[in-house]
Structure formats: C-alpha cells, structure tokens
Image (tube, rainbow, N blue to C red):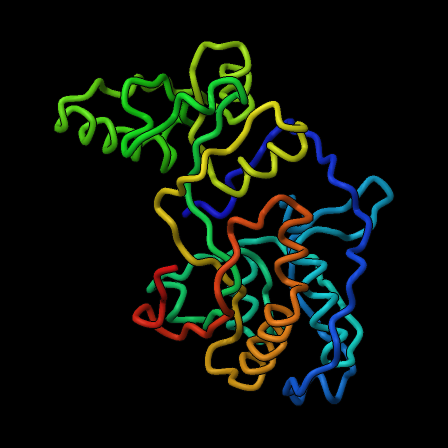
Length: 285
C-alpha cells in the first residue's frame, strides 16, 4: 500500500480540539528508556492529515498525535514528537536514533528485516460518490457498468482492471475507467458528473468526506484491506510490550475508537493491537 497517497489541495478543516476523554491509568509496562527519561519519544512526519499535521495555530494534532498523547499519559511520561522525514524512519530505527516511528506503515518482508511493527489500524481502497448516486451502487458487483475515476499508476488503477474482468466474466457491463493525474482532479470529475465515483486510498477518501461536509460519501466496501502499524526497533521487546499494552488499554476503554471516529476513520479500527515480527504474524481483519 502506498503510505503517501496525498490529498493535494484538499482543505484540512477538521477541528483540532483535543478529545475530551481521559484514559485511566493501567498496568502498562514501561520500557527502561521511558522510566529513565520520563519521556515518550516518537518519530513522526507531522504532515499526513488526518493522522498527523499542524493545525492553523501550528499545534500538533491528528489521530496518531492524539493516540500518542494518551499513551504518554498511561506510562506517566511527557510526549516528545520528533519531526522526521518518512524515508529516514526505518534507517533511523535501525541505527538506534529513536525507538518508535509512529506512522501508518504496512509490513513487508524487506521492512521486517530491519524493524518490527505494532499494528493499530487497517486501510485499503474505497469508492466514493455523490450522495444522490450512492443508492445506485448496490448488489454484489456495485461497480459494474459505472464510470470510475482513478489516479494513474495507483493501486486503484490496477484494481479497477481486475474488477472489470470480474464484471465481464459474470456477463455484466464493464467498468468505464477514467485515469487522472491527481486525487483533486478525480474529485472534480465526480462533482461535475464526468465520472460516477472515484476509487482511492480509503483513509484519504473518508477524510475528504468529513472535510468536504459530505460532498462525496464513501461506500461501505473496502478493497485490498491491509493492517497498518507503527515501527519499533528490531527485537526491542520492552518498547513493543509497552506500546501493545498501552494501546490495548485505549482499545478497551473506548479512547481508540472515539479518536478514530472524531476524524471520520471509525471504519478502519481493528479488534486489538498486536505485535508483528514476521509476515506470518499478520492478521486478516
């Protein structure tokens, strides 16, 4: 999955008000580093809304920032978000420059040679359309015969080709695929009725539904679903246990789901956080 499917030109309009619930202290194990420093240090890009970004006042906010703040409370530590370019994160963990890179990483065999992961989310591809057309996408093959916009060379581009074959194999009309250079262009094509819907990164689509006040709505089916997680230095069991334990408490007390729903991301919750040190540990949600 492409971690950096961006929403160029889309307004970041979600309120940065901190969620009002407070996670209760739990028996969460602390790593030696957090015990000694009193700080939970997290590498993060701070530029991928709705997960992490700076609001109009320059304040750090977003799903990951709020979750990290709640974890810091549970381990009685101060949160230190260290702004780090995405390509530098896994090398930085491998080199020992920091212990946690909290982004929405997908686990791959190559990455797992250098780092481990704690999974806390799922995502995939989703279709969004105008509210007046939503009811027309029904049945087991809702996209057959529809005009679907995709970004050139994206996962959506290839998936629509696969789904089109499934339509024709079943004797149904093929999908009419239109290819665009940016997500913004696809959105405008849907709004102007040049295509019936867009297929794009699911989290980006849900975020636009919120920020656009429902100009486009996301259909319920997710395609190519995959778990996403933060990266932890390889074989750092203390840090991994701390993060799994803290997140498990946030899942249990409702904080996790409330933060996701605040940003329109409730559909991407997983059942529980879990550790991944090898590809066979990945779960199908």
